[in-house]
Length: 74
Image 1 (cartoon, rainbow, N blue to C red):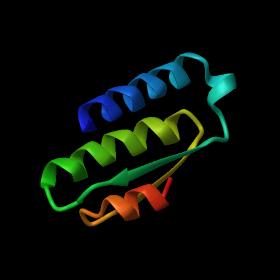
Image 2: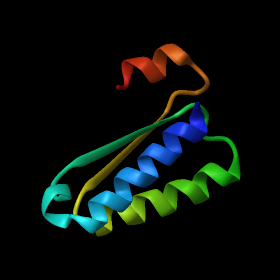
Image 3: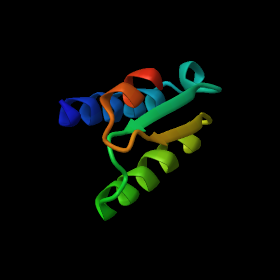
Image 4: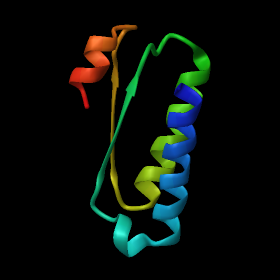
């Protein structure tokens, strides 16, 4: 499920970069299941760079492993 979400987000970011007029001034929100692994910090930096480069705002939250928190952040 997470890999599919990341793939969808990556596709959306690529599309946003390809069509900047449609992608500007959006807020892209990511709810991380947990933010304890170093990998997620690296991934977040790359996502944030792509989002802001496309003229959008990046927002992230750490659900701390709670499905309820993730659901409420959507």
